[in-house]
Length: 298
Image: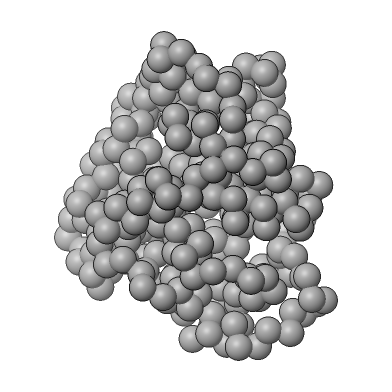
């Protein structure tokens, strides 16, 4: 294969009807590392909304079992990407999400904001730091992929275009970003976890955290009351990731898909996992929330 063969294949597909295939190619062949990193940061952003951060802190899961929660979230989302919405594994993953969310009083507004981060943050990350910018086909397909996921999750008033998702994210953050001590604890625990990921574990934890601050924008750092860092440090952190992209540009294209479960960051299930048993069971196992589960399997 030549470096741009996957992009040429994407350009022959229709992002309205072939959005799953396009998103799968983009996220598992063209940008597997970038999607994993950007989706991790997307979830991290959501902690800065106090209603989300406070809920996550109250469960104790993201402070006491943060590796497992990180793994479970990534593996559940990964199952849909790998197997598709209509597959047994994809339906089980969506059912698991709906069971967990159904155990808590989560507003549609917060659910819609989280969905918006999944669309918008990877686009912004890859356009700035990836080995190439995303094509318009990929951006449309990504928005349609998460519209479909949101539909299975029962989320209402979902934006139609990736531009509308981005506008919604910006407006929601401008209105809701604020400090909350519980949210800060969840963010701190997540950053501590990031310092243990290869190859981060080879560097001092303080340096990795400082590097992470450099990848955050000012409103996000301010919401967590993280220390201000210089424009030079911010530019240095982003430049380092950008340079990685320049190296990747000259590498051979990935012919086989690379899924999140294959990354060394995921360490909780060395012998494999069953997606139906991932996550938390706040109301017992299985969660007695058949309405949400049925809606997810629709």
